[in-house]
Amino acid sequence: MEFMISPNSMLDPVRHFTLSIGSLNCPLPLYQLLELSGCLEMSDNKAAHTRPTENNKKHPPRYAGFIAGVFSGVMKNAVGHPFDSVKVRLQTSSGRFTGPLDCTLKTLRNEGVQGLYKGFTPPLVGWVLMDSVMLGSLTVYRRLVKENIYPDEKKMPLFGHCLAGLLSGWTVSFVAAPIETLKARLQVQYDAKSKIYSGPIDCLIKLWKHDGIRTLYKGLIPTMIFRTNFIVWWGSYEIITNYFTEHTNLSKAATNFWAGGLSATCFWITAYPADVVKNVIMIDGVSNPRFHKYSDAVKYVYRERGGLRGFTKGFLPSILRSFPANAAALAAFEFVMRLF
Image 1 (cartoon, helix red, strand yellow):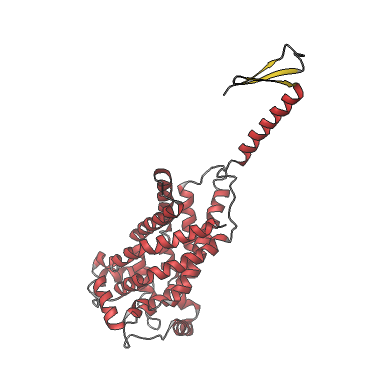
Image 2: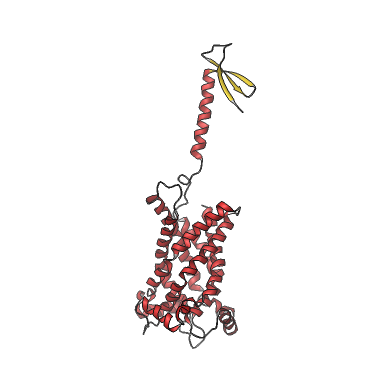
């Protein structure tokens, strides 16, 4: 449709004009033409002003990530704990099980289904707290990195997401270290002979009585080393999310589910050896510890657990757990974040 404005020669050519819209000719006084032009200009400016961009879109409140992380933690623990129990038992036992299936069957035969859920309470509380801190701090760090390092970028580069992931991993380590210590010690109580603690509270009290907070935080450095691999997790999450968004017709929920599961798988492939060392240190004796340095635990795993293969014990249940647990967890997290 073509618009044309021309002086009206039949009326006053200075004060009257003809607005032609297609084959329709409309004589208009000058003041009406100016009013119409002003309305069109205001409409264009308003549309340009309200068009959503990366810089002017509304951000959720800073506390939103912490609340959404609670839902992520509940989902992750409900789906993943049995896999985690098998993983930890394979990592910390020597010759007791031939593999993940043997570990699962023996646990079910000797301890029942509840054997797979031993140590469930610390991570139930723990994953809620850890995911709240991890994902809440991740959201805050992403915003801080964007505002302070990439203020002029419409979209934060991949390095920014990796940096935010690294900082959130180190932050949550201060919460995760004591919780994972309790969980690991309870998970390796196979029978009455190996049972030392009656539950998480008893475990907490006994460890605290020995050397206070120092015992609970013995695994802090190993935990931070392990979670340094959050660079891989959140970097791959951004890459996979962008790929599905640009090349598929998946809904946001489906994209979050697949990106969450696949990125967690990438993370565990790179981080698993550090997880083995971390758990070995966390169940070390408190009265007569075997490992005084991180390198001592690395040497122990290599020499006593069959060389490099020692760093992969329990890998299969960990990978089997990583996809469904983290896919469900991150889908829940992103869903709650969209509510803000």
